[in-house]
Length: 331
Ligand code: SF4
Image 1 (cartoon, protein in one colour):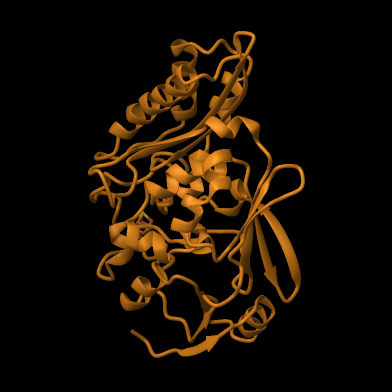
Image 2 (cartoon, rainbow, N blue to C red; image 1 turned 90 degrees about the vertical axis):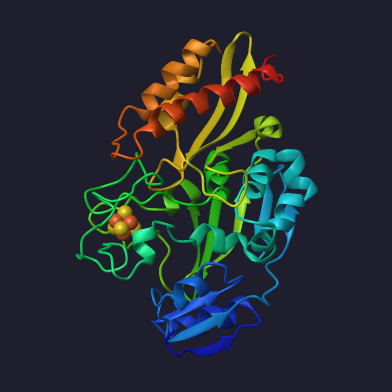
């Protein structure tokens, strides 16, 4: 690991000032991803700005029924919070489906959003990886691709986004608030992560000197019965092969409201806009669920080891929507 300077920031103003003058600095919160990357010599900051003492730890109700979540809220705390469990169960379920208890106790909301891919070639410095070293190539092509993306990838990178939490946030229309010495910006979660294109090393829309300070969830009555369903190779501590975050409201025999996002299949947390478009106003039948799922996966591009994800994603979408319907999504 490269030697680095350490700065402890007691508040947001100090943190963003510290990083503004240190272009090769990194914020550290829970450290559950950054420390691994520094040990592997993949992240090599000159300075680490410790934000773990900043009081961005609230989960507060907003006027109008939404919720504001501080960026330093630990994942385990958020999953257990009564406001989240009652109004956005899909978010609590997604968090509890990710990582291990120990990691959830350390990992923060802001860090979860910024976590980097778990593509094994990214972590292997002997492998070519355009994300780690732009222009070096991608050893995933022709390699082992069971966990790679089928939606949103490019000729440069097919890494899947690893977060469960972000899939729920995408379905819930979450907005990420970031702050720097230039002021505050608000970025919809669905626009926060970038597709790899020709620049897979550029993963998000946040600038190097901006700090995530909060995530806001809008009031969303349909989310009170939302669900997260995750399919993985083992029962715990495994990344999604496919996951689905969904909410469904049926009125007078047709779909009145639907939220659908996918994990494990996309190069970013994947909001299923096409499936939602087809479902809105349709009869809530297995046939319409199947048609919507197939349309969402139609642009999928598979590699030799991950072609199974396409049918698995379609089936998981149908099963999750059917489960919501059976649980009382109709009025
Ligand atoms: Fe790197 Fe992306 Fe290729 Fe994985 S898929 S080796 S992260 S460029």
